[in-house]
Image 1 (cartoon, rainbow, N blue to C red):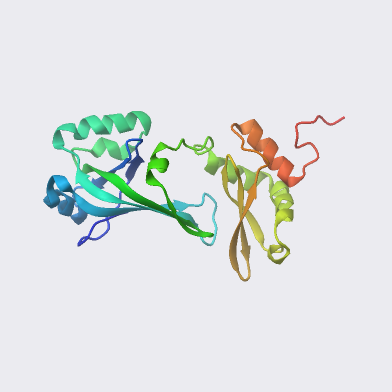
Image 2 (image 1 turned 90 degrees about the vertical axis):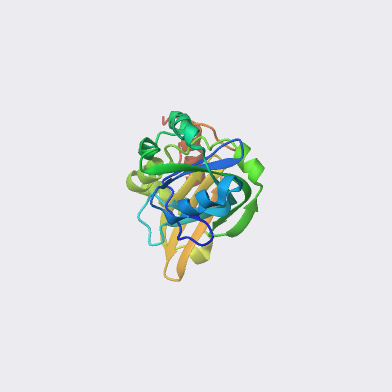
Amino acid sequence: MLAVPGSDPAPAAVHVLRRAGDVVVAVENSAPALVTVMRAGTGGVAAMLELTDHAPLPLREPVRSLVWLRGRAQLVPAAVQHTLAAQLAGEHPHPNLLDVGHTTTLLRMPLDSAVVADARGAEAVDHTALAAAAPDPFWEFESAWLRHLAGDHADIVQRLGRHLPVRLRGGAVHPLAIDRYGLTLRIEAAGGDHDVRLPFPAPVSDIEGLSRAVRLLAGCPFGAGLRHR
């Protein structure tokens, strides 16, 4: 959602963080927020983009984290709307980019600050480092991998639960997130929900290393790739 002063928040179906340090967003032409940005001229208007990260599994609290990006929203000149949409589509295909120039308009927002919040709290992130960061190697298939782990390997999830603090054992354990550095579990207990991070011994970079790291955390007997004799 894109929020600007004096207007209702506008859905931003397309939102791309670029290495140049700005975010490009696509909003519908009917959004009052777009009118506010257009009236502000080339200087733009103070704006905040809120990103909601939803868990890929059916949890009673589906939101994993929130990200707030602040900057000044500016109208992308009409002459380069289609060119920029084509560039974005080449790297991040999205059906809404086909509407640019028709029912949708592109805005760009050079970043001034970034804040990330999850179950552990909120923390400011250096926005220049954020723009320069490489994507996690598992971002494209994280959702499918977590659904597979929860649906087909309940035994491994239960083994991972052995790492939980004693006070959290007994609740329903679900895999919540995965990245190169570790796995996060969501525990749904009578007293509330809790997220627990289980770090890997070392960062992993491919699916084979990811599977091995998770099985080692779970204490599976052949987790290190040893063959059964």
